[in-house]
Length: 294
Image (cartoon, rainbow, N blue to C red; front, top):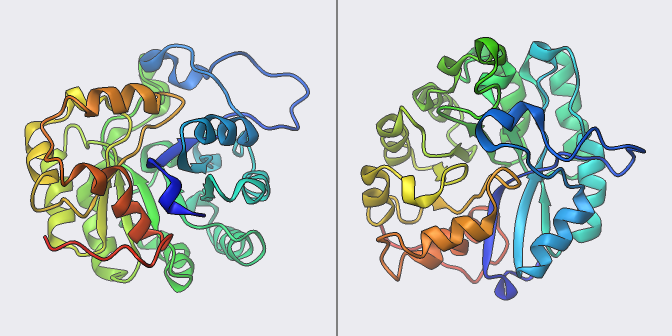
């Protein structure tokens, strides 16, 4: 991937449709309808076209929550990885493996790394129904850490199940970012990305990211105009090299995110760090980008 041609790197993008589906289930995702309304379901090639048009790159993934739902991901990790390889100038494939799968999760993760060359792993504690610091998940983290790959964890409130009876069975407690503090201590060489402004636990997320060198925060899922002031303040200062652009597309488009970000009180020298350079460094996309002093 030639990072020099990119205007931004979106580190949080969902694949909601498989190219092998003969019929789409509809034009949007029911699980997110309570928060975002009906949203488009795009395949990997469609996502590649979308981001190429904008001279951006994107990290793409699915979510495996089979333990809670009884169903595997709508789009397989293998499909995402194989197709993303065809668009390597634009897409970076992450995988999602439900920790509730136990020993099987470890085997799956190893295969996805060795055979499909995934570049990281996505976890959604509320959707998958586990606390990130539960040591039952540690064998899975060990595989990820051994491969030198990052792990991205949903945090805070979620649009999944919002407005549904009983919240669709989703429990918010699992996504308090403070549960990632033990993970960061026990896996000090595994980069951790705390996804989203962590409402209602923003201060916890800032504390963990500020204290643990390998912990980052992505800004996906919320329009920048709604960012808590303490998040903006630290993105401008202490955490300026550890904050990443993410949209949560297709729930929120990068176009809208960037329009609102342009109005945010962010220092001009910090904007390129958030939009691209921090991700370039984290994912090893360009050795010419040197670390910034905090």
